[in-house]
Length: 232
Image 1 (cartoon, one colour):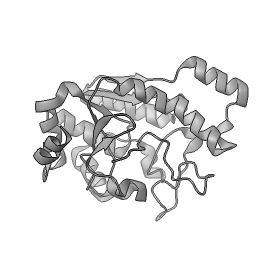
Image 2 (cartoon, rainbow, N blue to C red; image 1 turned 90 degrees about the vertical axis):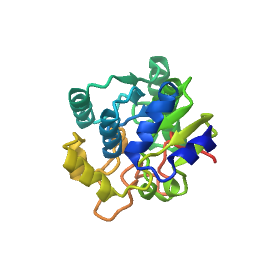
Image 3 (cartoon, rainbow, N blue to C red; image 1 turned 30 degrees about the vertical axis):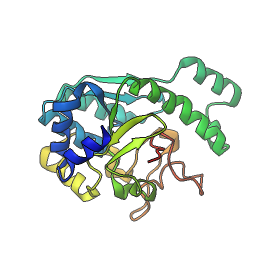
Image 4 (cartoon, one colour; image 1 turned 90 degrees about the horizontal axis):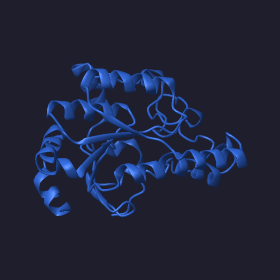
């Protein structure tokens, strides 16, 4: 299946890739949105191809108010149903009771535990039963992502991942948003290139790495939470 998809979408632009998935794999495909600018581009393109592909988002319980703002604007603009997935209440309660509400600052292990409870486990529920996962990953977002492929096998989740915007630059994304009046998170205009949970995200200076504002206290971290930890 992965070889077939790679062959068919070779040389296609992002909209054509989504149209192909809609025609041939709509029921087997799911798109994850965090309402970042790349995901907003993909949502707009899915609207243009009249997609029936399921969409979900992860609400960790620690999101910025601005993220909820753009979530509402997205629903108003495109009318897509977006299914939210939340962490399991008991798991969050146990973690906070034992370690407090900000344990993720204390060690890498604690931060990874928090990410697992709030992101990874809900993600696993969200993608269960699907064969293809569409993401907004771009190659130039980080060195780790540059080493990925546009179509790849996610051995952790046992499914195909497709990144339609893989070859897009940040300038391409911003130009698309402006041209098509796509709603986006206002934090992007305030120095936030990557927006996750509020306690773990801050603005970056011009020229800093895309992921520099995420888990900034972890100097040696690869700046990933585990959502996109794949092996080819």
